[in-house]
Length: 229
Image 1 (cartoon, rainbow, N blue to C red):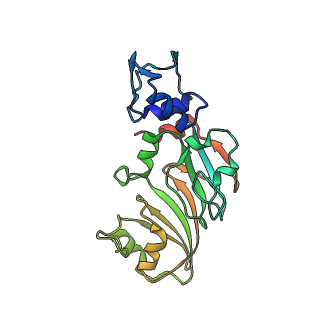
Image 2: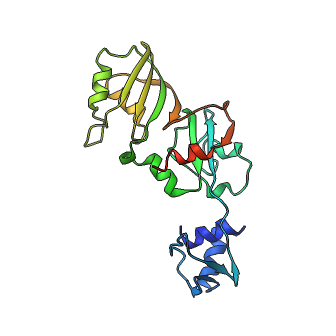
Image 3: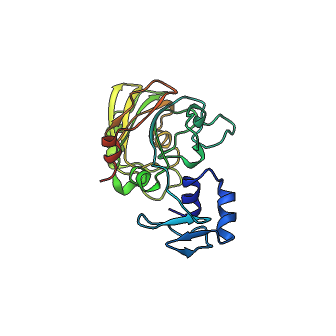
């Protein structure tokens, strides 16, 4: 973790305030003065600020059911931020492990642990995400085969990774993918001549959505550890 982030996570200081104190030589790592805010703080390091030892707050791991017309951002923009639903404080430290579009609903995982979220979002970890997809037209007969083999997205050089398609009705399907390209689900169906009219994420890894729209809860220790392999 960067030194400026560690200080923010150990105090009520803003990032700007933390950087100012670091540049003034007020911070030490293992008794050595450090004036570079990007210096990495490791687990066994002792960090002091103005002579006082700092202890970082525990990491947080949150599951939320994202409502439509909210954005996966820490601030309000054209749509309100989903963080308006989380009244725990220090929300600026949190980030979302796999963002959803404003009109997409469902499961998001929120944390301040960057190493943990890496295991969710990096394609090499093959973390499965399951979406319920509503379509404008009936699905084509060979869609399952096309998605299993990978489809060519506009503007991409490589095919998508193999994906699993389960047909519920001709115009409603479940799609399981292990990567998260920009607007990927919508672009995959566009590539086979269809259009997504509704999109809802049901599951990430072994964790299924179990709270109502707009609600959230902390993950259990077992759920957190399921992404640490």
